[in-house]
Amino acid sequence: MATDQPPDELEPRLAVIVDALHRKGADDPTCPACGHAALELADETFFMQAITPGGEIAFTGETADGFEVAAMLCGHCGHIRLHHLSKLVRD
Image 1 (cartoon, rainbow, N blue to C red):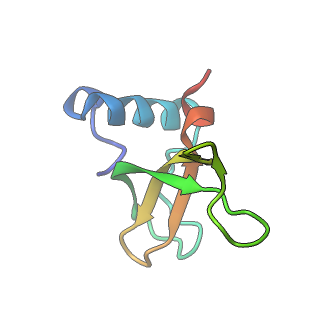
Image 2 (cartoon, one colour; image 1 turned 30 degrees about the vertical axis):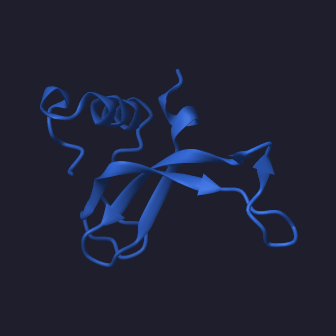
């Protein structure tokens, strides 16, 4: 999903992400890996799980440790740029 779409045409959650990327100047579609203007916002967010020093998934109680990310994907070379979602959307 390209970030140049008007926010009212996006799912409400994606519209918040697009707005935050724009406000923070992080919406440049130029891929840092290949230089093509092919970065697009993924339609979903992802959970980055924390790993212990021993290589196991880290847990606090029964909940996996980690954080949610928004991903920008390059349609040319496949590069993935991640943004820590809670840091991205806060003012």
